[in-house]
Length: 241
Image (cartoon, rainbow, N blue to C red; front, top):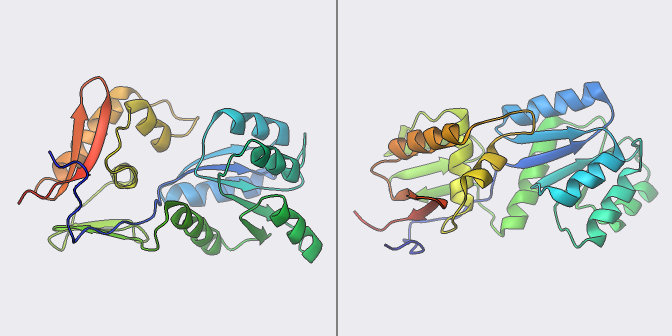
């Protein structure tokens, strides 16, 4: 079974469905950001306290951290320095009202990957998250194409033989997770962790049903999702006609 054989028509794209941590103590702003990012298919958790965010980041891996500076407990800069001191390279975007050059330099020198001034434009924030995700994966394209399957991450739309695959929001998230981990075995717990936030309590049966639905919709394409009993799931590109 050619798990890692990649036909010439295969092109890698960057991960869009991300697990994001927002650290923001302004409830109204945080709610707006969370709603917008979740509407784009991301799993978003939020912390309002610097100490709590720092502890969370010691134990949970995220794809991107959106970090305010003025926080109760400890500042965003201290959270960032602690993260980098542990050699954690998770991309961090600072979101702050501090607009002076010295503040930007301090943030970037503390280890931030990007720096945005409030109020932020949500389209720009989303775009910058995609840039960091793309950079981390080492890819510059947001289009995945293999055989008759084409998936545009920016548009969140999959087509098979040019026809819309009619994927639901969770199915889009799962497809992105599978594409981002081609050739790698993912446990059900890992898949659930990427799909759902702390506020949600999905069963492993729900994950199984989601995988089954997506696999059925991908029938006839070269993207295969293999179930390994007791281990989890692996996606790979097959060259079978």
